[in-house]
Amino acid sequence: MLVLFDNGTPRTLARYLVGRHTVTEARARKWDELVNGDLLEAAESAGFEVLVTVDKNLRYQQNLAKRKIALVVLGQGRWSLIQPHIPRVVAAVDVAIPGSYAEIEMPYKRRSA
Image (tube, rainbow, N blue to C red):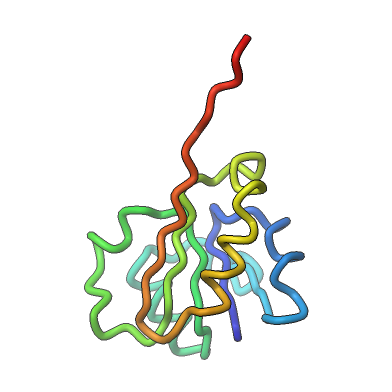
């Protein structure tokens, strides 16, 4: 599948998807200035099948009902918080279908002192 990472998605995550998927970052396409609706339009027009984002509000800001692109939303944007959840993220991308929405919750756990 063609997977697009938005600006907040850590690029290190791509190494866990390559081999199964082709990953491109929005900034590599010079789409880093596009706002949500425009980014979704550009991604769909370019044939991307999945958008991986950290924007939890996207589902409320956009009408996703008729979208062709699947959305995988990460609950956190920091790599150290995403890393323990890599298998869940990969699984969500693997099963994504046009128009689907998956949010991967990543609760922040404080380290005890």
